[in-house]
Length: 302
Length: 338
Image (cartoon, rainbow over all chains, first blue to last red):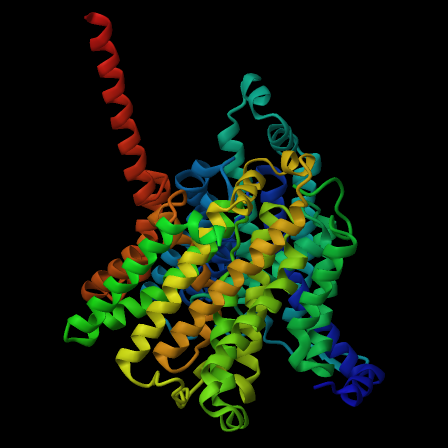
C-alpha cells in the first residue's frame, strides 16, 4: 500500500519534484476555479449549488465544440465561460430561484433533477463515449525544462489564467459597485430593493458569474482531461472538500485549500496511490473536527 | 410486554401485510410479482430508513445509499469467503446477516459521529462526500470487491433450518418477513417517545436542548438506526441479485432515494414506500418508450418539487383535511342560519 521508497526517491530528485508539483498545481487550480464559484454562490445566496459540476462539464463540452469548429483555443475557452454563464442564468431564473430560502431538501432535489437532465442531454448531443480534445495548436511548443523536469507551456497558461481569474472575481466582489450591491442584497434584500435596485437581476448575475468560473475551469480542463457525461460530479465533491477545508465563503481560503489538495493528489499518487482519496477525506474530517469554520473562514457555521 | 399492548394495532397490520405479501407471492404463478416486490422491499427499506433522517429528524442526508451498499457488500463478501461458509455451514447465512447488520451499524456510527454535529448544508454534503469515498474504495479495491464488475459468480446460500434461500419461494418469503419486521421496527421508533423527540429536534433543536435532550446523541442514534436498516435493504438486494454492484454506492442511488421520499410524501409513514413503488413503475414505463429515462425522471422531479411542492400522499392528506374543514365550516354556517 505505502510506497515510501518511491516517495523518497521522488522527493529527493528535482526532476520528479518539479513534475509532480506542476501536475499538482494543475489539479489545484481547476479545483480552485470550481470551488470559488461554489463558495461565491453560497456566500451571497446561501444555497449550495449541487449542480455546479454540470456547468464545469458544459464549459468543457462547449469549448470542445468551438475548438473543433474554429481551431482557436482562446475563442473556445471564452465560449466555455459564456456558455456556462448563460446556462447558469437559465437555471437560476427557471429553477433555483424558486427554492431560495427553502429547506435543503428542495434545493437538493432540483439540483439532482438538473444534473440528470443535463447529463442525459450531453449524452444525446455529444455521445456517451469519452472525448479527447488534445493540447491546442497554440500550445504545441517544446516543454520548458526546469531543474530537469518538463513543464508543458499549456500548464503554465492554465495556472496563470486561474490565478488571474480568481483575483479578478475577488476584485469584482469586494471592490466594484456590482459586488457591493450584491453583498448588500445578501445582507438585506428588501432594504436594497427599496432603494430601487432590482435584486433578482443581481442575484442572477452573481449566479452566472459563479457558473462562468466553473465553465472556464471546464474549458481549461478540456485539453488535459477526457470529456465524459457525468464528469462534473467528481470535481464537485472535491471542490466541496476544498470549500470545507478553506472555509465557506472565503475565496483566499479556497485558493489555499485547492493548492494543498492538488499537491496531496499528485504527490500522493507516487507515495500512496490507493490512499489518495482517503487522505483527502481525512484532511476534511480533521478540519471539521478541530476548526469547523475552515482554515480561513470567519464567523459561524450556517 | 407493554410494547406489545401499545403497538397491537401496528403489529396486527404487520401480520396481515405479511400474509397478503405471501398470498401474492405464492398465489400468482409467475416470477414477476415476486421479483417486483423483492426489489421494492430493498428500495422501500432504503427510502423509509432515509425518511427517519429527513422527514422525522430534519437531517437531509445525501449519502444514505452508502449504508445500503455497505450492508450488501459485507453480506455478499462473507458468504463468498469459503473459510466462512465451510466453517459455519448452515449457520452462515443468518450469521452473515447479523454481521452485515452490526458492520453497517458500526460504519454508520463512525460516519454519523463526524456528520451529525453539522448543520444542514454541511451535513448533506459531507454524507455525500463519504458516500463517494466508499464508492471510490469499492472501485479501486479490485482484489476484494471486483471493482466496477461488482461481486461476480453468485453468492452461495447454504440452507439453514429447512430454509433454502436458493429457492425462489423461500427467498421471497424470507425477504418479505425481514422487510415487514424492519418496517414494524421503524413504526415503533417513530411512534415512541424517542420518535417524538426526533420531531422536536426537527422543529426546534435549540428548544429540545433546553428541555434537557442530548440533541447530538439522539441524532446519532437515529443515524445509526437508519443506516442499519438501509444495510438490511442492501442485504435483501444482494440476496435477490446474488451479487453486489458499485452503482449501489453511487451518488445517484441516494438522489433516487431522496426523490422516492419526496414523491410519496414526507409526512406520512408509508409515503416513502409509495414513492418507491411509484418511481419503479414510472421507470419501467418510461423505459418502454425511450432509452433517455433520466431526462424524463428529471422533469418529473421538477414538476413534483416546483409544481405540487409535496408528495402524492401528502397531497392526498392535505386535500382530505381541506375537504373535512370545508364540510365542518358549511355545517357551522347552516347551524347559525337556523
